[in-house]
Figure 1 (cartoon, rainbow, N blue to C red):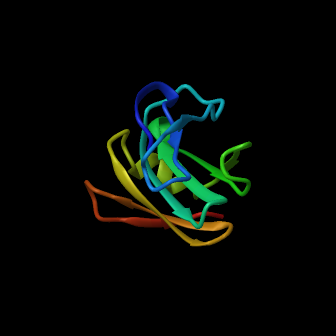
Figure 2 (cartoon, helix red, strand yellow):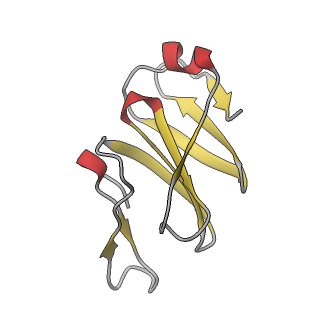
Length: 101
């Protein structure tokens, strides 16, 4: 679960309990997609996309094409993992879809 000002929580028991995670970024997060319990991508303000392959212990920034930053205003978008290191983001405003590079 993600939210405002870098808020992020993780569950390992189907939502019975939640543990806060500190991703190291203080932006509003809009969307998260995970593949299993280890690999996740999160998308947020300033077109920030971050990726974890160790269950949220550490995060690294993912890059989208430069044109995505110009076309995607800071409004909620949907992010989807395609594979462990490839993600797509869809703009709710324009309908455009971008792939990580």
